[in-house]
Image (cartoon, rainbow, N blue to C red):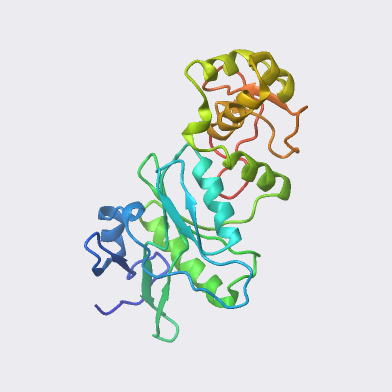
Length: 268
């Protein structure tokens, strides 16, 4: 299928993706965005293995979907972690679509494969890249950014080059992510006991000890902090004196600064 020139409104763009049957298919972008569940399709291209590079492709187990999502860099894994914790996100996928267009300046065919896709509860989508620095990808990435922003805006979605969260926030999220699996929520009644113990802001160690043996209770505390049932300021080191409180919307209190996909203050 020949690509039309992409205009400033995102028109003339096509999407290539792999169907459930494993067949590479190409549709007009508007049609694909409306009909394809990109959160369920396989990557349209693999992440390269570069000899000598300290980081290679890996897998992130998503608490949102209960499935693994491939990632190609430490920066991408961090953004997967942030999106996986966002309560508005219902689906995640890596490299599910290639966008194709023809450059209006020189008539050459262009394409770009965003690293991440996230589906939100309202049905909209996010296409995103996870650069390690603002200048990563050079001029080609910046040209693609303009095209992808217009294409996503055309269908009510968003495209972002996600900035890494602050170092302290990232470290706290990595720690909490280690307890994201439901097996860490503890026996029946423990989450209710935590909500009662942390009904008001209280030091983490103090509230944990009030519920029971810290060795048994702490995994459930960290799981509740990951899920948002308990909250704490993530821009401060997570330690025994950190103030923890039951979430305002879920359990009647809250002190945590939520993060959206860009690592800044977000929804919820």
